[in-house]
Length: 156
Length: 262
Image (tube, rainbow over all chains, first blue to last red; front, side, top):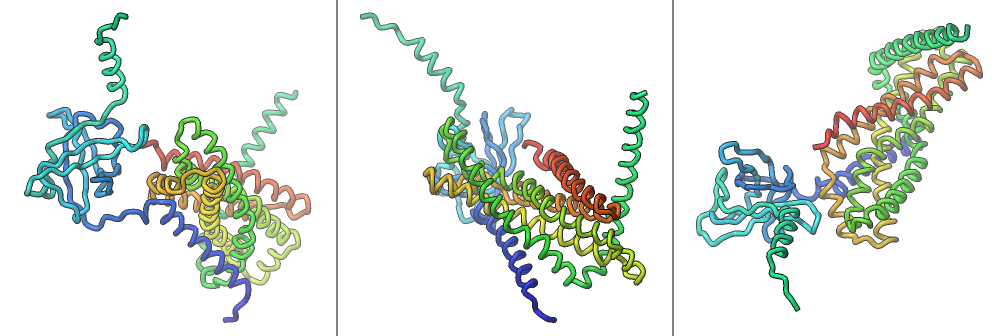
């Protein structure tokens, strides 16, 4: 088959297009950022999850260790049941503390894990017992105003 | 009796439109049926890829760059009010990948490549080249229409991806290099916000759909054009108008299906 410059340009066009797609996937999208090879599941009950969403990150000491996979309401306890999948490389002690934190003042919410001192590790499917709910900004402001009102007025 | 006349005209136009939609559908299926033989002669598709894809590269890249730069400027101005300039990257990338990339690239493609296709086929018809092919027992749909159709369908997603990628760099240039948004937060917020399957793949699916619609409209208008100079010019105009409207309407439908706000 004879080669023409036309073939070259079409080839260059297709390569450029595919390169753009790969660049979008790797650099713009989240495909290149974090890939968990093997995971294990944990779950935890929170009395209020605030704005936590599935796929939110789970961090320990600021390092991404997993993602939230499912959130549902447990109708026996009336608490939110959060299922998370964590990277197999990272094991946590039984008395690990799970907090719902916010990145920045108005950023997205994530779960922060604070490891305890237990020598036994959490296994697949187990529950994190110690949790702290999301800080709801409105509640915080409400408490602040309430406390202020309780303070005795200082007279000069 | 102007009222009766108006009703008459509306009725005639509606019936005509239904006729043409039916014809276009039949034309589309015929194109698909005769596609097999055009894949066996792939050099025909390559030739059309050159005139639709490669020739549209410059307009797509320049437009993408400037759209990205405008997004960077406008996004910064708006986000600054909420003190969240660091979200500029995710804003630019999401609006490009989800909407502007596929839609603007398709609009440019319709006016750059679609109108050319219509004019070319319309002129072939006006100069009786298509009848000549039929006389030689060459199927004009397999020989002329199908390669152009596949060239459009293949090149549209590539052009849209290029548009988005160049646009992201345009936004980066204005936001990070010129205004001075933090580079790390620009990229990391972008990567945190853009999901490969939900955003990028849906954008690619959108551009596939737009490519199909634009090329089918362009080819059909050309094939159906009255074989006169006036007819070809009218068909070219109709291609640009109809396919632009079709892109925008289809975009709403696809967006409603893909992103139902979760």
